[in-house]
Image 1 (cartoon, rainbow, N blue to C red):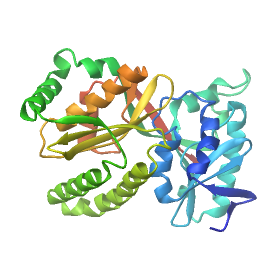
Image 2 (image 1 turned 60 degrees about the vertical axis):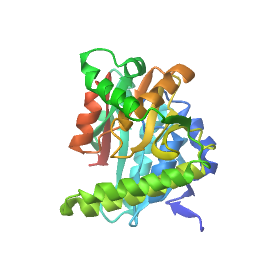
Image 3 (image 1 turned 30 degrees about the horizontal axis):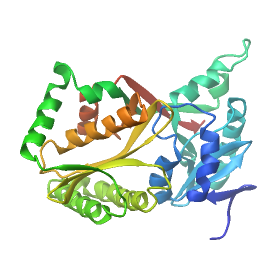
Length: 326
């Protein structure tokens, strides 16, 4: 691959070699948002062609799609340098893009937005740091207390416990195993294909194109996850029934206290499998890794997914923003 450039800055591909580089910058932050890990970006963004550069001593992650460049995350670095890096990045994107709306920064954690205000000089107007930008609330991460998801105590979780108990009664010979990328590869890919077929059977025609575009990226992400599972330090579990994979889920530690769920898939026809599998992964994080909070990410604009995530009673809703130049 020929080296890509954005202005005077070289763009390096977001491959496994980038992991220690990106994590050295992420280590300077202490965020709970699901987007601020190497694995989350490597699995999903790399499918769209992810590249990074060090600009103004900040790690800057770009996505190249249809010839247009945008930023997947805000510049990662010392807070005193982030605003300068943002200005440089917006100038570089504007010089490369045909469409102004393509020059944007996605998934800016609300803590980072607040940090711009927090580092103002006393005599500086509060809107000055972001006066050159449009800051738009985009998505919300759902963060839960791990202990509550393990215990499922109280009336609020009654339906979850019913579904889990029915799964246990219906499938007494089920097996829960740590995910092994080699051993479970074929079973996981078979489940993915079955899941796609089941979804397409009931998919409205007007939504089919969007679904197919999304599932193409998801299949690539799952294959990449299985190929590089150990190197990414992921943690996953699978459910086997009669030796067949009926569900799998994978997560990772974001920081010392918080873990995220990156992907989860279960067989539609195995009642209670989703609820049981989710509790198993959370239990593993809580008891074996000392995790106190679980981030399951955003609903991506899907109403059904939003209802499911809210039904688990999030302890915190973490807003994320998209930033455009004015």
